[in-house]
Image (cartoon, one colour):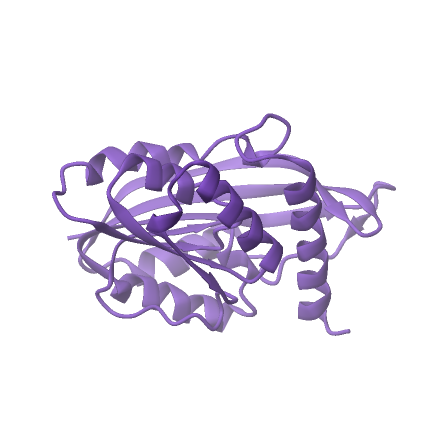
Length: 232
């Protein structure tokens, strides 16, 4: 098995364990609440009198998409490569009575083509580090840039400087396709969005958390980079 396939197998296992054992918006996991940066941005869209077009890359079971759908008039393209994620997303969306606002698309983010000028709001929450290469990351950032309409918002949250330690305390190759230094990720982002964009938010914070693997529970430490860009 090649490195990319191994990483994606481990990530599929990790997410499946979480999805099967922790309910959306229940305590005990990262599914317990939507990302605060996302909820902070939502009032910006409430002034619109039309339906907002949203793209959620790596949507999972709807941690953010469902909160968006409950808060504003919108249509959300929800992209994920895991069938189990979309299965739970559909159940959650029906439970919260927002299923009609969602368009569920089974696809990896690498190959999903973002059409130019289609979206008001794009989210990439802890997903771009799982693209297959740095070249693919740059292509996807440019697609996101071009996919936003004037006034559109892009939220990026990305793990950098990733260290993974197994349950014996031994560092291993992190199960992330791309492991950028924070400074490198900043350069990628700010060079892509330097023209006709403003940075509404820029933040980085250290984070340590457990992650399920086939061999047991490992520990991840990373520098989490957060951006909110607005297209002028």
